[in-house]
Length: 272
Image 1: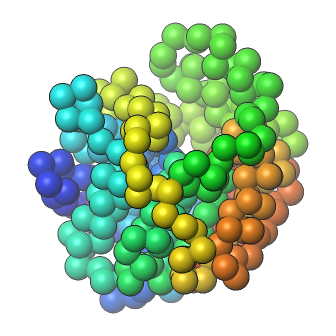
Image 2 (image 1 turned 120 degrees about the vertical axis):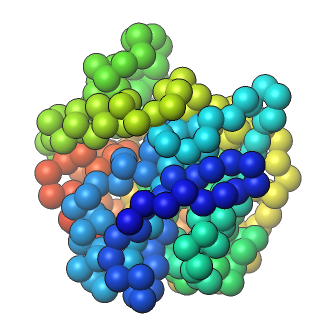
């Protein structure tokens, strides 16, 4: 079921799968990523575990509103409040929150600033929010080399990026990645607007420096040992910062779920 919800002046595209009477899982995608970046196999695996699943397009991605960032800049806190608007729009008091990469930062914000809305927390391929990431390992050389290459925007560049994201250990499911990326390009109101997320991530926002030690939600950290963006040190830093957090290292996993069987594997590891 698709639905648009309102977050202030912004319209957010959402999709719900599963029985609406079941506990909810909110999937928060990473920077510049649409809701469709969450694989159908992962959604189906979660539904089979007895939950409903909601995925959505961040502002400036997919079918959600495009924002004039220069005229109306936003921050991590604003993007996190969009997540709350998604829950409100579906009448959900609290959810199991799953965040990938930047989505994991938004999930941390929710667990700190809206703890009653977070039943459990799963942080996938993410990093501590705020200045805590200072001093953590930099991205891998192959990822930095891809950025430096300056490939022209388009599906081929996107596929090349996801090949780097995937890492070299687990096989890269290029047909599945290409199909998702083509779909994302076709449904984006303005593909270039997604770059605003990077600007938001670095924009001053005191709320992101709130202590992670205040998180009370049961927390699982899922991190690949081949992540070229946030190496395993980022995951272990999260585990050290959040009381009672459990870290599960996924052998061979990179920064995305584009290896055969990996979406189903991760669906079985998400905290419910």
